[in-house]
Amino acid sequence: MAAAQPTPVADADADFALQGEYAGLVKNPWGGSDPVGLQVVALGNGHFDAVAYRGGLPGAGWNMQTKTKLSGGVRDGSLVLLGRECNFLVANRFAISLDATGRLSKIDRVSPTMGLAPPPGAVVLFGSGNADQLSGAKLTSDGLLQAGVLTKMPVGAFRLHLEFRTPFMPAARGQARGNSGVYIQQRYELQILDSFGLEGVENECGGLYRQTRPALNMCLPPLAWQTYDIWFTPPVFAADGKTKLANARITALHNGVPIHLHREITAKTGGGKPEGPEPLPINLQDHGNPVTFRNIWIVPHHRRHHAPRDGIVN
Image 1 (cartoon, one colour):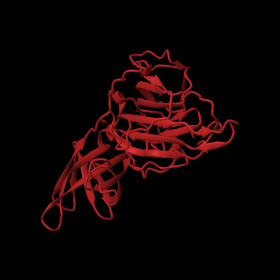
Image 2 (cartoon, rainbow, N blue to C red; image 1 turned 90 degrees about the vertical axis):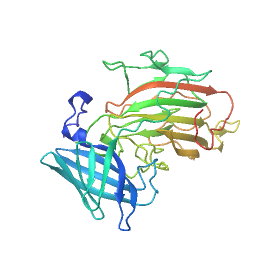
Image 3 (tube, rainbow, N blue to C red; image 1 turned 120 degrees about the vertical axis):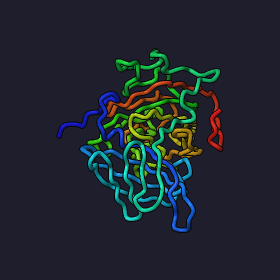
Image 4 (cartoon, rainbow, N blue to C red; image 1 turned 45 degrees about the vertical axis):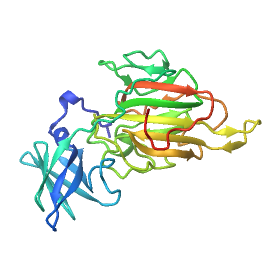
């Protein structure tokens, strides 16, 4: 089977216009109105899945408990989504409840750390088309960085900011859909994947690959720019260089929301290099999908440090 190909923004089909995030109020049986969020996921050829969230979208009001899965297709230019507990008609940037009075509006969320400028002491790894700090860098025709690069500098403890965009690949599924990753020291992978509207498990976006799931799936729709803000502390080894005394730790914000807070990384992830005391570069993994990057900078630290516990970026 041929690999699914990405769709550029300019050539995106009618399904692309329907996918995305919707938010608004829906009347409840007691006469009031409840906030509701809806994520609509394009699956290709007019087919869609969706998730409705009570309280609002993930990271913006959802109560972290109540959600309902829906599915449906396009009929006469409108998308009909049906579920066990709620149903919606989606068209013209609105989702109309078919069960009660209520209308959700399509929104385009932007990470609060988008465009974050490098602070004093930062090393710009990629910005304004300059990739001098990277090995194997290739740029798109519009000056974005493609996946498949290594930092020239090896890293120990650091703070990292990067912005990434997953492609629109509606016919693809699972690990074939917008796959890349931030491979810290070529050992520990913070996964990048088009996981919009999914559960948010260990091998999806924000997961420490196959090891620890994110606290919340904060993945935005494909072709939306997203941010990772990462603080990393490497493991501690004894003088013999073999005995590990303390695990690596990571704090990560996905689109400004904490998904890992001082989380221990218990071992290398996936196909990462074996753990050890020597610093190694960061790899922005090429997994065969056209994930792109911009505005990447790092603040190296020469001592062990702690990220803010409240997840606020300064």
